[in-house]
Image (cartoon, rainbow over all chains, first blue to last red):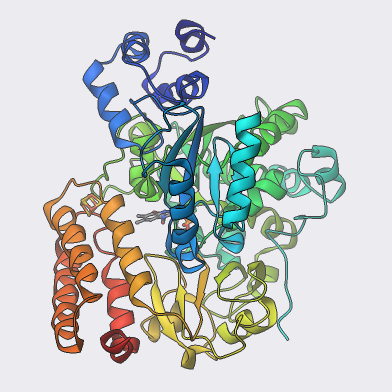
Length: 151
Length: 416
Ligand SMILES: Cc1cc2nc3c(=O)[nH]c(=O)nc-3n(C[C@H](O)[C@H](O)[C@H](O)COP(=O)(O)O)c2cc1C
Ligand code: SF4
């Protein structure tokens, strides 16, 4: 779907700004909001471009930088940390050869830290795009990487 | 032995959450029919009799909020908003309701809307809760098809529309006035209270905001009566509560039990005891904006007032158990990092304060007991200043975990 098609699905009222941004980002293969899409959004809602940028910058789920095909949100909140998430995250980061916030050079993975994802009874947990993964161990991370690389 | 008593979770795991017919076969939407057949004032009446208190964390009497919204004006536009932004660390009760029985929330919202005279409602769900979002979306569509939503619901003359809105990764947007800003499509900066949402809420109109679990109790209260609900739980906090238990326990998970349950019983009977078999070191109650309690609290009955009398909080119902073999400083640092990250930066005491106390907490690691003692005192002082001078409840929260951990575990923090 191109930007205009997405915008046309939403009534041009300001309360639709967040739903529009979610939809635009979800439809971008690099999981981010392009400047061109944000300009079109401002025009569609008849609001200033700076107020659109303000909203995008405020919410952590939105990105103005291209990201990988798979965005990893790794939970480091109290319960996951208590259950050893930091070690697993370190392994993940070394295995992908990137630091938190970075994208692999092949454009496949972006590694992000996340606050509590509400999967605390199966900590450590993470999400990759819309899928969640729980009870994480280095072995499990290894097999997830292989699986996603091959898909 | 503690036994579960399921009201909000009565269908959870027993029916297909994507089938409205299964919900109806389990008795669903009969409460709505009953409510619509009676006078609107009956909803607030039953809520008052029930003594239900908000399950979003603050424990505010639900009937008072509902009555204020109902009475504010009779013929004006009003809104109802369900707070499904669940972001308090260690909490996942609302997710369980939405994923396993979305219709109970939809039915609860329609009843609440009828009671206050709202024509439009929103479920504000955190953006990462993809399954909850799709389940609620589907439930809303099915409720429209069956005539439980839309115009002239079940030929009662009552009209009500319901929509989903998504959050986008901000804990602060779970605070009710900030949530309204976000719903209106803005950045999540808090509004000043008063005015309260019951007078001036969404787009300046009277608005009722309730948590998912709160609303999920409405159908049973209408169906069985407020008196029935009040017979469960404790005198000051009737009913059941969903607790989510995590950390160093054998069977982490969730349960719905009558309020007044003992903390020790929750951990032993429900969560299978600690992983190393020894008495737990601490339980963090209510998440990051919560309080640390020691093992000696095992026999305290869990309700808002009894915990408060002991300087603790029930909050969202999160119970994070830390085993005897684990240090406490890393968890404290983690919580303070959370507040630093989630501070919106609008007011100076919180913007600078959350940064400062986090930095101070990092220094604890390499200090000797004497240095740690000075650092702790300084952190408490800063958190107290923040509690007094911050604009919204987020900046007023760090004092809760810091003060409680210091009260019960100062020796441990100095020497671990
Ligand atoms: C920083 C902050 C975050 C909050 N997050 C939530 C939340 O995720 N869900 C919720 O129901 N209430 C949350 N609350 C409490 C709400 O402000 C409000 O009290 C609640 O939605 C009222 O509903 P209730 O009366 O049914 O509990 C939060 C409060 C603060 C200060
Ligand atoms: S207290 Fe913190 S979160 Fe609240 S308005 Fe001030 S800076 Fe923002």
